[in-house]
Image 1 (cartoon, one colour):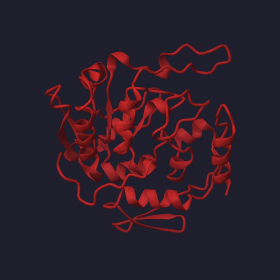
Image 2 (cartoon, rainbow, N blue to C red):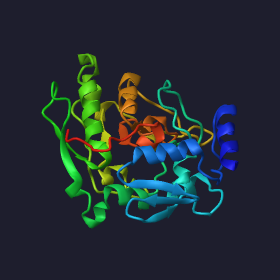
Image 3 (cartoon, rainbow, N blue to C red):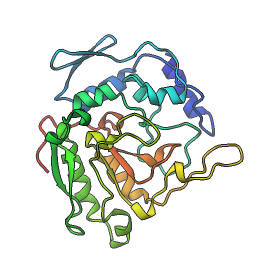
Image 4 (cartoon, one colour):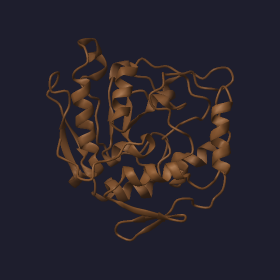
Length: 269
């Protein structure tokens, strides 16, 4: 119930802000999206437990109660990942303070699905994806688990049909797999799971490079066209340009947040 109240506040308050992330049970729609997005890994949800196909159980809610935005990022549970709705398909607009939909990741969940790169578990799951073959000869390593590489290949095919005016944002890619932590943290980046891609190196914006306003808030900047963003979103990728702590070159595969059903059997791209 508290989580539903939080979602209503996000819709009703302008500009949006996130003074805290309220604890609460994961709603039925989010539960359905989570199970549909990881059909090879997840079996069912039993009360507060996510039941994996190997019999492992993971709590959806860690019981730690409401969290500040900083704690929400540092210590998210699975339910926290859904706390701020991701606005797929909408126009680009400056997010409210600390509105970072999809930026929180339960590290144990992603390591179990895609592998822990610090233990050498991700490299064996990587497969090369031809990136914009009509424009480049790049082949990008991407995680084949859960259809991630197949989804990136579909993005690549669609983007390859855009006019040449988009080339400055698309080619070459600025990179995919990299076993590293997020700048300023000890948390593994989505790149460390092999499910993220950076583009538009020379036309991207990053919140850490922005000068704060007089009130301490971050000025928003973006040049990436929404045609590109919507193509990624259509295939299950979220965009870092929808975050208050924005990273407009960044896209990561998060089908659970977009209602995209991962293929039961992922074909090689």
